[in-house]
Length: 203
Image (tube, rainbow, N blue to C red; front, top):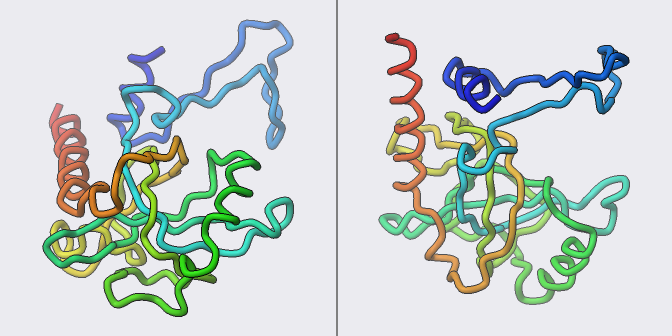
């Protein structure tokens, strides 16, 4: 199965569908069953792209997440410009207990009155946070983004890099915000992904 998934990813597909051998495993549009399973790059250890990012803002949650922060705006750090540059919004992978913990953590002086000049993004979250913690975030692959400004100028003159299908993995308590993934790290990961796709296209 892994070889089929790798072939699909080299062809720029999102993943593969796996069918159960059960005789009743029929396909029903818009209905989730145990008969068909989706396997994506970010579900498989060793195939996903992993970043250490800093939450710099958030929106108020809706529905079941009302009263919590969701999604969070995540950023990398560019030591050359001394900026935190946005990479993605993340709202997957969190437990209810973690949402409650973060609601209590990001309060008081950790909520900023306005966007700092050293935050670079087109996003406009409901609130801005001071850079405090680092989280591991995994996703499927990298894309050029007109909204997120990670590595802007390193790969594209005016656009940054974002990661698709981001998911929270865990906090990294022994890491300072400025020690998170850098803009150069993300540019290199994007270029590495592009080189792999170019090699596949030439086959």
